[in-house]
Image 1 (cartoon, one colour):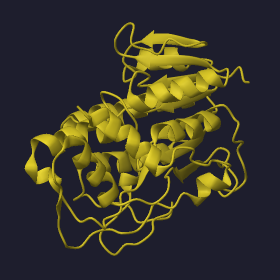
Image 2 (tube, one colour; image 1 turned 180 degrees about the vertical axis):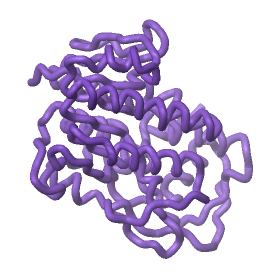
Image 3 (cartoon, one colour; image 1 turned 30 degrees about the vertical axis):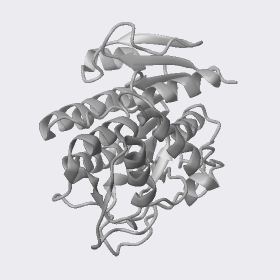
Image 4 (tube, helix red, strand yellow; image 1 turned 90 degrees about the horizontal axis):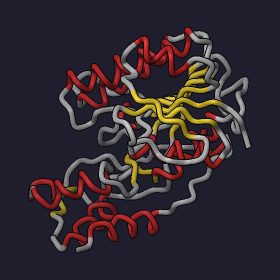
Length: 300
């Protein structure tokens, strides 16, 4: 159990709500930052804070006296300008407020999308080549935010880099949004069946975030043992191997439609999460369980 005070942005989102739940289970006091009153998880130790974390005054107020800031917000479905304004500029505002307030630890939910996963690249660890400016807005803005957080000084920073995040929820990209696209748009049913589908379940991602945020995973002198104190450490958060045959096959089966398998160049590597495992993290949700949850949510 811990009495740490942890601020979580996006506390009502898929990732944020699961992180809040995991922190509550660990006995933390959670300042759950949301935009709308009454939307934060109602759990022991959770305090709802309504406001815009991109507002410097609100950001400074909500991080004052905290032990950890966890940032989870990115408006994935928005245009490039909104993604940059909220995902990068807004997150950087509250991160800078945390540094100014002397908050010792910042945990940011980034993405494995910052890595180049072109055909032939192979396995990708934390030293992997990052995407170029010709990548999607999401990947580029996440890349740029990671770089901005790396430049901050005065606090320990941890960049969690999950690939596709499976897990039930109305806003879940891979359990809800993406399947709806596959259902409604025939062009979304095409894939190379052997293309890698790197993934992690939201429960396992939240467990690692909470363990880092509460100090259950202590800082260390090198990234192989834990977050490096006063430095910025990236850590991949990925479960076991899977392919588009697994994921798209499960989606189309549940929807009662046929996938269209195609040949062609595709990334067939994996997101290497050896660093996270060396920190003591082990995924608890396996692929069959995650896909059955996905199917159950899509069946009529």
